Length: 125
Image (tube, rainbow, N blue to C red; front, side, top):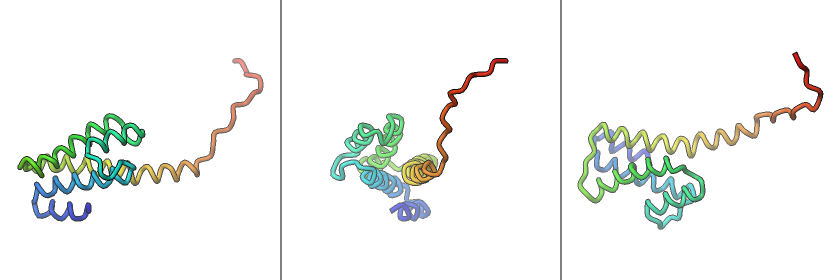
């Protein structure tokens, strides 16, 4: 799906790119556990309640999905600069949720635990 969005971006189909970015976010939210048939607002609310995303994430994702909604339903065509913001937001979210999160979890299993604090007498200078 993301590959298709990059294709329409490369062809300068900005409206389709914004709608596609919104669709990518919709699918990502479902993969993260939001109910499939729910609205964007409902999915965002669910992900916040489940502590999958923060309120800040919700605010950013709401702006990104609204941009796609405006392109799909209100004849809004983002500028190239606005599309950069939309795509950077989508890419950042996907990277944090699906790449960094998985790698960090795998790494945590390999990091040695802290040594317990010693109970011996403290030395004074």
